[in-house]
Image 1: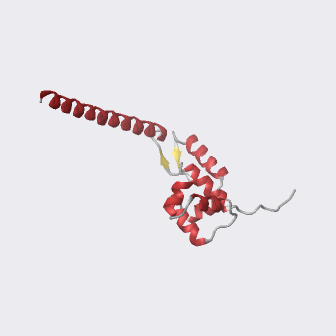
Image 2 (image 1 turned 60 degrees about the vertical axis):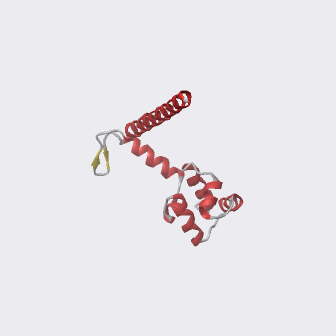
Image 3 (image 1 turned 30 degrees about the vertical axis):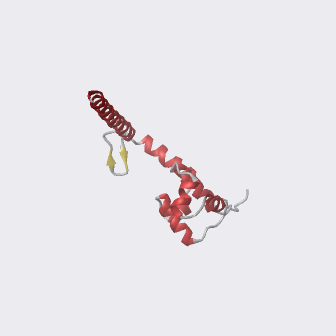
Length: 135
């Protein structure tokens, strides 16, 4: 069994975090003031200079350490543990609700707000049509 560790491929880590953030290469390029081709090249690079890493981390909303130490196994482990403990204790805190329920509730509130905004626009159109008809 070999004890050789494969080198950290920072470009792949950047790519995975960007994808997890649901961000396209073009959006990251715009945030960094560059083009999509430069982002593609960076994501295919095994190494990225420290100055560029600081900019990328800021654009992705993570720390440089998070970029350097990112592993998909750790992410899945975190979410599995979070889900397993979502009805119980997390660290020293006791959850009395399921965070996923709160997310769904928030989504439902956004839908209701959207529906109210659409209705307000319909009311405006109806009012304007009435004004035009009365002239």
